[in-house]
Image (cartoon, rainbow over all chains, first blue to last red; front, side):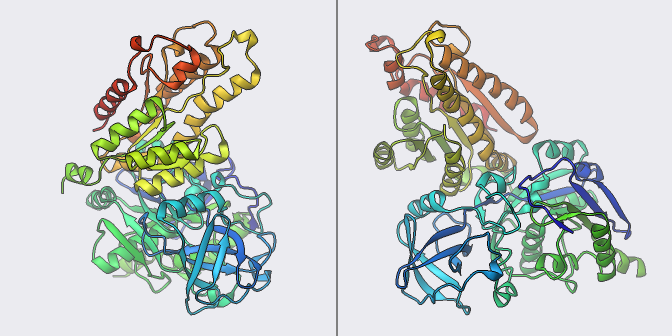
Length: 352
Length: 231
């Protein structure tokens, strides 16, 4: 697949590979997504807006230039400014993360000067580059500092520098994500109307989509890190209504899938409120809520790709991959999309 | 499980631009008194600190006329308020001061009036629409109030830059309101009347202040109109 290297969220020629519950594969225009829905279906998207999580500055003790990328926090609360962050050495996003020079050794008590912000290293979290930080100041000052000094996390494959408006989805609400929940790039307000006209429904949850890459194999192997989420009461009701009417639940993106399945695994059913997703979905996982996923086209080996294994078996995903490759689909955050309906349980049901 | 209970569990969450003087300040005070969670925007750090200290509202130092400031405002407001129910686009620019015939109006003055009075509200509403629609889905409604003026309707001489920008904002409000019906978000254009404010003093220096409406009175009307527009 080709890297989509222009920050256009909805190119008019964006494509969608539909991997059917019946194992069929077909190509449609992504703008036709709503037309694939049936009355009673429910589309759930992640309405997190993206925090400008990349903060440039200096490691005070060594004087070395650093970049930190905010990576997680324990909840979505405004007051919760106990971020963990990944430390990067000198240089910027023009150098792929895996080729960036090593950052200085950061020890507990070290101070990072990040524009108007100062953060103390509270702890190293079982990896020398994964730090728990304590920012100086009250929450309002820290958010103002992040808003003023932070930049959107950049990608080496992307030619222009990404501004926040490039990475906020049209439905972006609370600042919660550290990288954009980019499956939502497919949505616009006209599509939300079409979903309703189709007799289907639209709902959201908020999930702190995390970093996609750190350039360190050991750290990348731990992704996704625990991600805070919030499920609104209206979304729980919409799921119940979809279930009652025989409708299907379509998650827009891996983050929505992770939040919903994590919640149901812990609580037994979708429950409104806050949680932290630690679940890693893969081919061994059984999906309890989500029937289909609208997602970017992910390359084999990534955690996003692994998650698709919960929807379709390896043979079918390999066929889909070959189809994406042959079709010249664009990959990465601003690329084309796939809609993967859950076929695994269908098969088991038929066999039963 | 009642929508009413959910909707009333969290206080009203309101963002107001131009919140350190005139109508904006009166709105910040009115909502703070009601127990709403309020974030406001203004350009000067001193003014923002003063109003924040007085009202307990969250102050954001930014300029709605600047494209680069918009997402910063949206981020801080929706973070501080934990979502958003009401946005009041109140910050306004008069255009040339003193007021001038259109033929004598510098292009830059018209551009600045459009940037503050039209592009600013458009961009900020767009950046916060996701939060407003989420609020509407939760049964709390979502309301945008764009402050206009009778100069948006009546072609007063020398009010060209201001009047044209407010006329555009008015029309934009009506179209957006129609388009967002399905999302449960309302967009209102409200003319607060001729008020005793710094903007009015700029436009008509030395006007008889006793003949002007007090901004507190207009703020009370707007608070009522917003309450009316919510479910």
